[in-house]
Image (cartoon, rainbow, N blue to C red; front, side, top):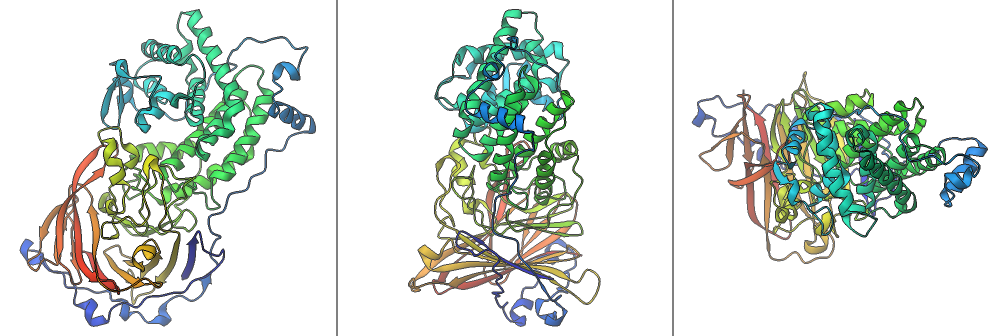
Length: 634
């Protein structure tokens, strides 16, 4: 089976590209022996798979019509009666409940139902709160030292503090009577520091949306105390904050923040008294914002798996609010959840944890599994996420993940990374080739000053020229010019027997064309039995740039944690001993392999020291080809 696709700013929708690239001759490929096995007293495996040995006639014929380039998912507002439509329109133009029902009885702020939290928090973080600390990505930040008003905190800590996500952690660590005092003290300090809306991080639309939603869902933690004055103060804060959000949700920093705002408005319409008009207003805005956030294949346009998780969490919590008042959510909510889950599953490794794309870290399998179960969606991973941009090849116990799309555009990027044509590869529960990840965790144990480097091309398992990024990495998580177009071709190759076939991925990007006049093209061939991954990286002359002189090229393969290494005698091979006891060998086709230090962000967002394999060479600007092989030893 063959599929081809071109994506990017300059790509034509529906265009099929069959551009191919020739492998080196068979003699060159067969000259990549597995060396170094004798050093460890193990038998050298035979190279039983050769791309040239595959008859072109054995490739399954036919081309699947490619999906459109990144397009917005289109959802219409929920169907309502004519009267409800008029109420929604009046509320949008600023007519509140009193204006819509002038003869009704004035209702004091109150909650109409209690929500069962569908997504439990982190008990360890909750215990730290009771001990007087916010715990975030391994770093303990004393509550007494937190500035609840004023200059910006590190982004993750800012979202935690002003978004009140810590309430779920507190709820998870102990019985409610033991936690209400802590929750009220922190909330009281926050309300004192932020008596009214202001142009501070606390009043970013995304933080406000999360804050309102957490206040509503965890209301028993902050409204169960004996101090009636404090309870009334908290309820008034809820009402005034939601009223501010009604007027300012359209000024959100990005689409995901806008979705958080609309989710909070819809939840407030369900749970605060006299909220029918607000609910109608919120539902329409939410569905429209989700259509702008999500592509046709269900991937968020930021291409960030953490944003994918956040969008799913928002909808799961909103659905719990509907359940609390025994109301049915709009059908679009379940439709969008069904779209969001398969792309998320596509970027999970064999251990069930998240891969490191666009600043994400290896979020643990338990959290991912709990989230998926809460959605109620039962589906398989999206293998060929053309629009979101991640290719997935599952070959028995091995999983290959490949970034085959341009980075997100500036207006959607959140912790954006220059990771085009990087890949990750795992076998069973062990990650062999990874990306560093953790760019979004800066402010915990990963220093903020390191975040820029973790978003760079060199922090990903791909090729760099002269240590320049394939796409410019800017401050505040944004990206500049660079890769605008990626060609991707995916084919199934049939072999002679079971497990002897393979999946062939070929992709190229134009990130280095403007500076060097070179296109980076990468070919990956993964055997169906999961025992072998062949790769070839080509620099192809493109455009009119001069081709004289030399450039420095580096191929980096960041290794997963706890892998033992043994360098081969000829310098072209390295043996990898995985934690499960299996042995793999990495071989370079011609240039020596260096072993250098690296780091990897673990499931808690903490830096773990690892190593990387680096193939570095000086090559002419007329182009060059590098071949390499990763194979399991028998």
